[in-house]
Amino acid sequence: MPDDLHDAAALRLRRISQRYTGGRRALVGVLAGSGRPLSIPEVLERDPSLAESSVYRNLAVLEQAGVVARIVTNHDHNRYELSERFGEHHHHLVCTNCGEISDFTLPAAVEQALDTALERVARRAGYRPDTHRLDVVGTCATCQHE
Image 1: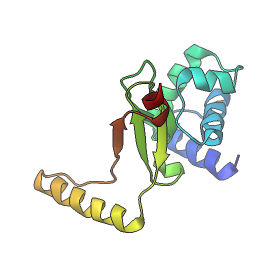
Image 2: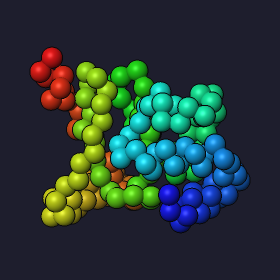
Image 3: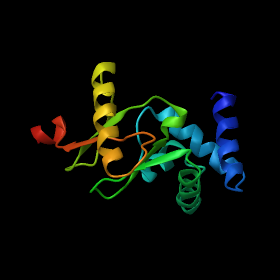
């Protein structure tokens, strides 16, 4: 795990007067190594040394600091991943049946056109956009075949 990732996470936590504890460091490590958004049960499977109650509390603090992003689904469990400040800009495919989430990226030209359109909409509403998130909600290939 790159030290600069942990240094950046520690800095973001200090900005909200929080410490980068061992449990928070472990959570960042699990999410950084996952390659996809994880539910809390999946986080606990990957690192059984973490206490479930601490994972809930620490994810909330990491989300507040902007280290972690929560993806809300209509399934039993939200999913968590490192925020885009710690990775590449991407979007999500969200299955309404099983709750599985897959990341995807758009070609640069499409991303630029989307940014332009969203900035125009935001300006009309009096917003100054920082970034955008796009979730495509539907049914995954596995669920379609079941």
